[in-house]
Image 1 (tube, one colour):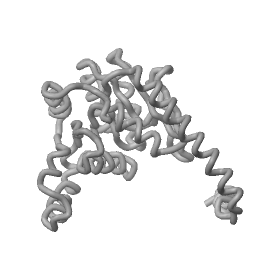
Image 2: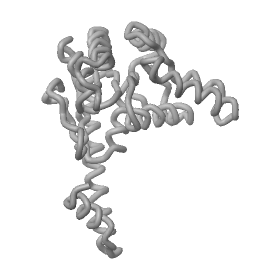
Image 3: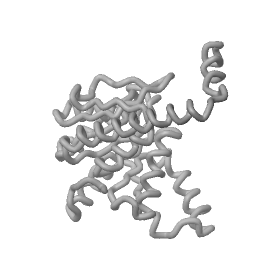
Image 4: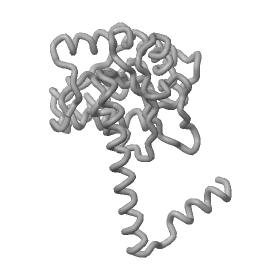
Length: 236
């Protein structure tokens, strides 16, 4: 770790007075409110979208990059906009697919020190910047009519399991959550079944909140079949 990084960490952990904490927290509330208002205002104009999640580290030429691009292209041709976290990797691929298809390509970007940058395939008027992960996740969950979850790391799993939890607890209306890639996600799903389910930490019905597929055709079909039965609308 560089000395400059250590200085930043030390500075963050310096003792603060209650007055300093109160002043900082008050300004943070205003920043959070501004992000929510801006996000609601911009995304309410876009219409039905599907969110695509996956690793920022996936390189062009990788099978998952290609899969994300093709999925987004097909979903766009079905009339959906595409929302991503706005960065590189799988996010870039999905925005690229939407861009090539001539559809709405939305990026909810958050600045990260080492890897996040807005990709060039987002519509310029549909790039929304965030400081806070939780306000960004709020926008995904309100304005996405489906989640496509490709292989990714902790951030991808965070988005996935928060949505599953909110549907399980009836804080969100049900919407399709599609995990793509049996070789990648299969072990996790097996663990959910053999540990969580068998030890009665979840119910059998909870396994119906998401589906696992291996092809882009099956992923798209799951989304479109769902909305042959249900109305397209914001999730809460």
